[in-house]
Length: 289
Image (tube, rainbow, N blue to C red; front, top):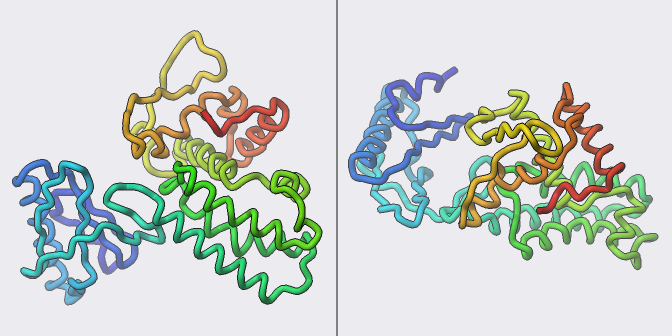
């Protein structure tokens, strides 16, 4: 209620969440950079008018792109500090858009919780350990993975190490191979769960149950003669890993391999059940190219 009019008169893009505000735009020339600076001035005037001044020492600017001219931006005449990485709603965003920092952060948080469980839990039955793991540990490595999905092998192995450590913490599974432990506990690898989450998110976007709008990220192929379902998505040509492994590209191959009955699901729960059935019945690897 208090900040609802903050974006009035803003020419570029603005994002607001609680007490976090972000201004951003493509700045390929000085005119666009000047326009963005004017928006900083408008926001600053708003804070003065409503006696809610920004703490400039906690305001930063991040330049993204290899050809970025890195213009200076000011608030109240003070030049904003340039940063290479910044925590945004629990996710570390880097100026090169790589996710290794976020993977390390997620691993560290989950590892600390595993350590706490190991120090304090004496009765380590399978049921108790699974409840603790699913409730306290796994959310740290699955939070917002659509935005920071790991694609380098070293990052995938780092994240998967959490689940390997957990299985070894159960006394009866200490000497068991990782794959056998997964089967006995009826767990999927974290990589498989991440890709399943991508498919579920895509379905929600397609059904207008989640943002952003479907057509802002995806394009239907509308091919008359094709195997599989009739809602296949077009893949774009790219030679950059950042684009290739971005959510709107990496999920397409898995989506295009689904059955018609899966994509025609009426609800998210129905989609989950049919997706599970397709994987189980056809033993299809839906998660890798």
